[in-house]
Image (cartoon, rainbow over all chains, first blue to last red; front, side, top):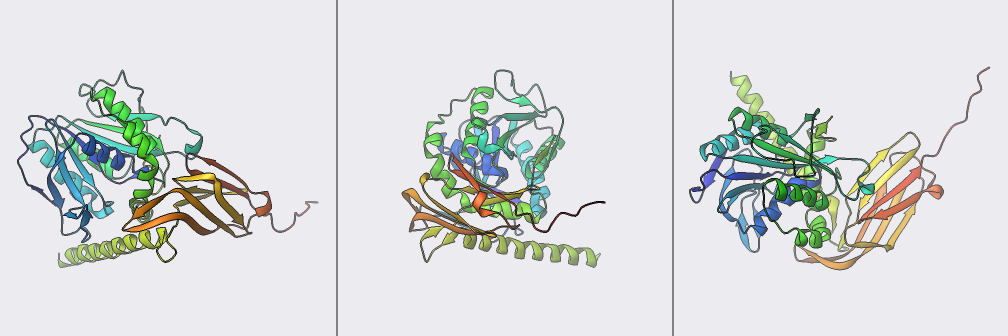
Length: 240
Length: 134
């Protein structure tokens, strides 16, 4: 797997947000919104001859499915296709080596925690796992530290690879629908990010556009669901 | 050694076929282009005595949903509050018939709708007869 950059990254020690399609598309929706709100610029992409031959067309422009964006102090990696299970290790180790090379201060993952009774939950709870407790102060957030459990899937792979490279990782697991896009879970995750990282991402547009986002991300949700089913990762990405 | 590389090549080929199928299936499972209707995402679970069908219906409202059930199929049709344009096609309706995993008693089904998600609970039909233990 190869990381192709259009421009050098000149940020001293960036925070990096990673959004890979997963349960409820919680991370994909959140990171896509961060890219939009922070007006990040595309600085590169990730390619592999083992990825399916897919290109996206957005507003008349051809785009790679896994792209890297940057602003003055942070970076985002976003995938518009689910990653095949046989590429997870390669993806995670390539990305984490690159993140080490650019002196990454913190990696932020956001994923869904599937719950059967999601319909009866008005405000989904956010749990977190932090590999280095000194990296972020979580005490003023509403998130609860996960004390015991097992994380599975793409984010587990990223956490492992980043730990091997000694990069701190904050992973937020937000209660969500398992098989439907859940932008309201993304809103809760981003609220925690706002407090934990002293950011000021305005979430009103995401709240307002949530229904439309759910329609526009149906296809990605279905593809992700199919991949999770085929790779027998369907069900919780977390046990605890 | 060659065997390992052959195996890896075969795994890659299988994964590529799988990915092709996943992308094609996702498209055909979600759109009826001819009728310009969206087929909603659904999620089905079962308990010992119920089949529970969750249906994702963003941009739909409760009073515009038509729901019918037989002993083995659930039919849903809903008008959206607004027209949504996807790939240059305008969509205004959801429609889908959902094959149920067990025979149900459709007359005693219950449904609730919240935040654009419809949940239908259909009691399973109890078949056969009880046997007395002497």
